[in-house]
Length: 458
Ligand code: SF4
Image 1 (tube, rainbow, N blue to C red):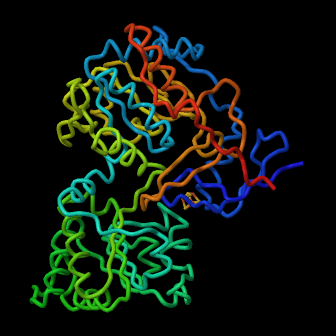
Image 2 (image 1 turned 45 degrees about the vertical axis):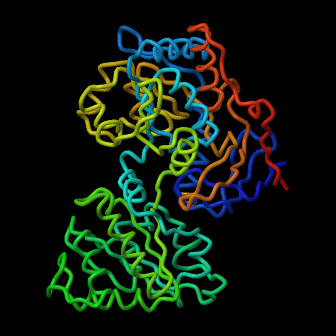
Image 3 (image 1 turned 120 degrees about the horizontal axis):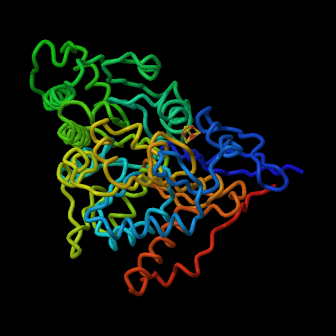
């Protein structure tokens, strides 16, 4: 009889909805139905049933074709390749769990690699601003229960995080927001008329790339000074009206996305947004949050900050200490300068997201992809090693966009013989130790760890 598993987390976007219900076959090998998720999350679960999912590593042959090899052969090749490289680059991790993100650190240290994650192409500028200016943030639960003014600046959750608005930010009824949407005023600040902008009570359609000026104008008005007739294409009266709404809020929440982090100004935009949040706290309660996009992309920032003291762009090639300097040690910059001689793409798709020139440089050297599925990167790789899907057939810890850790469970059994990211990294690390005649270093807790397996089966 099919089993209904409740309280399942969705491994697609940073909203990390953990109220899904998944109906699985009685032998726990097939996903039959997915309830409560948006269409993107549902598709991800159903994709796990795909009979063409790779079950063995594939290695590129001299004639250009790909040939299936065993996991032992793939692990041996990866270990030897990593040890032979002077400065490997290990990138990605949005679709991995924290256990995998932690395990890869041993390989990175052993190989003297640069360890980087997708923040390098999304919220890296937000990290830089937070280092400079702090991060007056909160949890999504506080947004649901308290926020009566919500600002979406340079982000479009209706497309990127489809259930964000219904679970946390616009529609839900909370403790102090019992009338839900009726009690909230929504501002969208975006150069495009997005679907989120269409939902908003006020849409400030600023000129593309002029966010910094507009943040500055908001702060100037808030401090009681005058501003020019138009700033960033927005009339003075409209700006004053928006500031007044934010100032009079009981709890104002500012969400920002890549429309701020990757337009002119970049980290300086976020600096200004954080300063605006601080200024608003002299009038009311205000909080700010980065709309972290890709599943567990908040995870590596947490895990690696514990391990190395830095969230991304971590250069371990000196062998003595970790060093972080975006622009010098960031993936795209390293690739564009051809300063890396081996590339490992894990749980992300550099083939789809990097500039073509960066990919062309990376392709001159060994190119390894670790991913449960075929993707653009896997199709140009020298070695593609499939792993389990974290959150579908592999449990583990993930971080939601508000830095709240959640234990995700697996809903079906993994494909026979296919390891998790963590198991694969551990085996590569062990092989690297064998090849270099060194003793592997394991945490004592590692041997004892046990995951809850489908505790909510009903
Ligand atoms: Fe999954 Fe995001 Fe959709 Fe929630 S909003 S169901 S986390 S894709």
